[in-house]
Image (cartoon, rainbow, N blue to C red; front, side, top):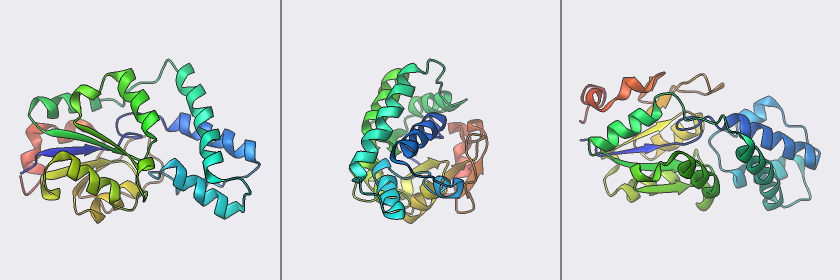
Length: 221
């Protein structure tokens, strides 16, 4: 029986990818590296510190990964504060309210830094719906490692077979399945070149997984 839903944030709750993209590329320019589209896309779903560690290794940079993280966050903060058009992804607030109203426990499991998570949750008043928020930046391993979803299940107070994950990235889906959790792949127009083949189901609209449809979507419900 489904009792908890674990949401990713970037690409599921908020389309902050354009700001992350700009912040990363401004950081790349600042440290003098050229990152291919393929390499950049492979970062999707991973924490900033792990991305910066990969960059330091790949480009043999003399700067510490933490230096790159600070540069990226500086640029992101500027974009976030100046972007008055930032909105939640269509339909996600209705879905969050629907689940919350029907008694499901909601947890956030995001690779974003906790500062970024708190900015989004404060801006859109989301804390009232979630019992816990987990940041990949605070954990030992990054998606596709399952650590964040194992921790999210623990935070929910239920078992993994009573939880569902909503993810939009290849790394996130792999992490959810490695944690043995039912995973919905959200294939939106915001997501680019992601593999949804390992998801238990793939959707393009949150109306497809409203609470009143869950019984027919999840066999164990």
